[in-house]
Image (cartoon, rainbow, N blue to C red; front, side, top):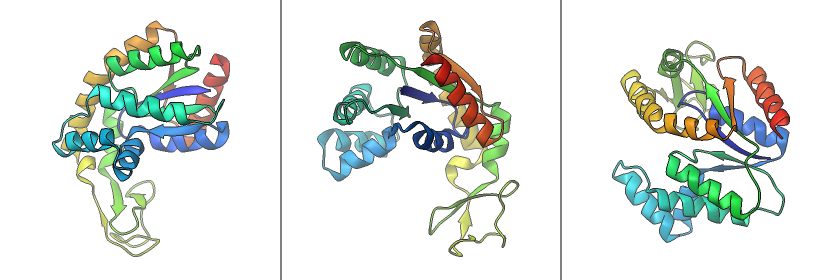
Length: 216
């Protein structure tokens, strides 16, 4: 299977990607991981990507496209994959279309996790992360045993800047402006699979798998 996973920040893409890797046996390709690996390897493309990130800018399409397609070329023959964080723009989507056409293959489906934005704001504003081990807690759904302390290492829990209400709203605005044309692009190809991301994790996973099996 060849899958693209879309959804707003806080919709649970990371959780679902991890589940799908286990259940479907596909390899997850995250642009963030690709950028970090390229920088560690002193790959010029990775260094250019982080120059843009450090300036607070989006990584240029040509750099992202080249890094992703290079990685896809290195995958074991016949192994399926799931793209998380790519494509983000229509230009990137069209480049992926061309790449797949050259390989004489196509996407199985484009999974769009749908969650109301206000629910995302409420979900993220109560998220806390351990400064030491990086474990995540939620003040309502998964609170720590001792307020402000990590259950695993005793480290201090804090709210990431990205999870503050005003920051979340800004991220959602950016997502909306970037992703609306992408949704239209894939909907027009009959590839879009809309999944309610506001259900229990296991239910969402099963719904994604069912939709992909039907599309396969």
